[in-house]
Length: 177
Image 1 (cartoon, helix red, strand yellow):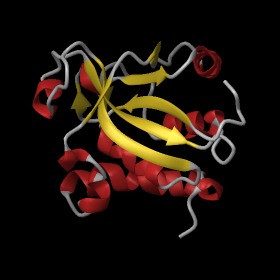
Image 2 (image 1 turned 90 degrees about the vertical axis):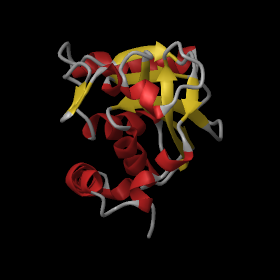
Image 3 (image 1 turned 30 degrees about the vertical axis):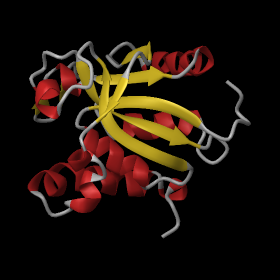
Image 4 (image 1 turned 180 degrees about the vertical axis):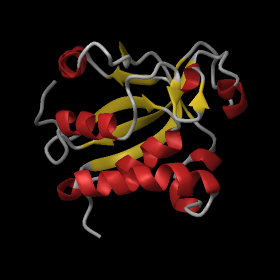
């Protein structure tokens, strides 16, 4: 992958997509974040179909980023800091295959870099690493959820603590406010 390219895309599944989306929206170098459903077999699934755990999809975000401002390695640093990659099909109280840890890469060069990074984390990491087969954007009510509902119970209890951790651990990478 040409690191001088202005933009790259990678799709990340780390439990609830609201959490992953909220974290990446705060980072400098992020050009866009879309919550949706990755992999799976059912075309254009609904949230209810994905939540059933039977569609084969993972809740994921598709991240567009500028690799000059936010290198792929830093994207992966953030991703692994905001979720637990050692629990299969679970993030906290969210349980099911739709909450699995996964990285779905855009091309072979990106895939090689991701595989090397994940291998260095150790054998306890269960994050699946695959080429992206399909991504369906989630319904409008799931986009930018945290920004629109910061006082909702899930946002206060689950997302806010993750964002606080991110803000401390990656302060230099945050967007200027």
